[in-house]
Length: 187
Length: 187
Image (tube, rainbow over all chains, first blue to last red; front, side, top):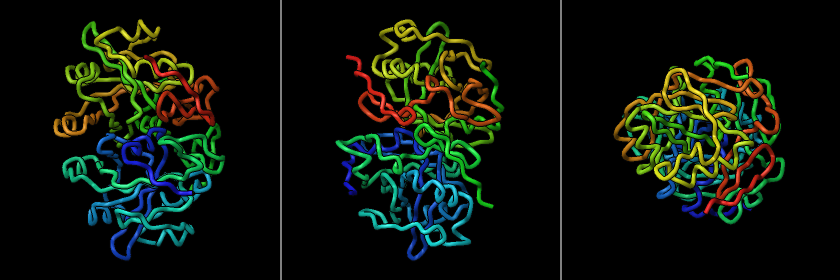
């Protein structure tokens, strides 16, 4: 079941350092990218920082809307998380291509990806200098959600195996629990 | 054995999202703090971003020197990592109190903590606005080192159990491999 996470506790959701999916939407156009480079930076109000590279379609949509969703994918989405990181949303609808289902958020238009363990709806805090210089986006979390098999009483607990978080290593490899999970990089 | 990591590959060292120890030194004064809130932000030149709260002794030393070391602690340092996060270096020498041994780096004066899996020597890139507003420090990695039982051919591999990385959850709990490792919070 998906539960609402109180904002005072949502800063804990990125503490373990998972690889995330960043989803975005402008009108009928939506996209999703993978990002290992993310962190919480504050608890009140909760804020995150995410690297969104210049030239990507996600960057274009986030620049236009000032919004995105941080989705925390699980083992069952490991291949899709790898796949969406190696193709541009300008060329293909990644949700259709990789059969990623979504559901709507509460505060932002960007879609939430099903099968994740948690979701942070985010509004960008404009910081033009660091966005331009470092591709770094600071955002306030305005709503947060979690799968209650993974998150309880305001913190993560040990999830079922298929809902373990992904921790990117390099070259198609993730650390997932105590395992190295390897995929072929897409061509 | 500790090996030098080429700077082109060191950006991968924080990919899995470990909790880190930030060590600092000014003349005869040194300190160490724990930080779950960290991320790589660039690969060339390699850069990291770390939250260093205002008012902390680490912040004072980093402000004075423009340098710090990111140490990536392991299971064998889990209790110490928790402990150093709950006491101020103004009140006690944490290295002595928690029996943390160190060795010198190559490019910065801050000490490297023994028993870690990797080390990033960092020089702050001055960004006064985001330092003041978000306690966020951007730094360039100027030298990097790793334990060769954990890092090989430019990437992390599955380490021996005692050298697994720590991923902070909340309230004295870490995700370490597939286990939740719990400690009593220090008084």
